[in-house]
Image (cartoon, rainbow, N blue to C red):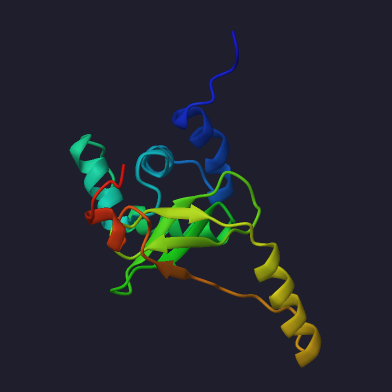
Length: 155
């Protein structure tokens, strides 16, 4: 039998990245991992709603603090939606990612970020800047929401 690798087991391993272990942090992280698997990017509000529906005793401020700490630790990607709200997605590794996000339905696709990383490194090199960091958000309309999605199936 293999070791547990579900959200609860992962959360237990990841909580030390946030400092002192608390049951509330573990609950937030577990719900966050489950939400990523089901929805992709989530807001702190929607995660808090998910926790409240499960009768988890976690306040909204704890959810925000935990998600922010995960982002700082490199375990959450953060984007802004069309209204400026921060959305979070669990990142199981420390590798930096970029996404293409549908503005209609919110579906996100992780991209091969080599071109973006090369571009950012080139800008840093030619500008003379050091310790350059970047945030790149690509948005568009996915094939399921695009103009052809409402048309005939063609087959």
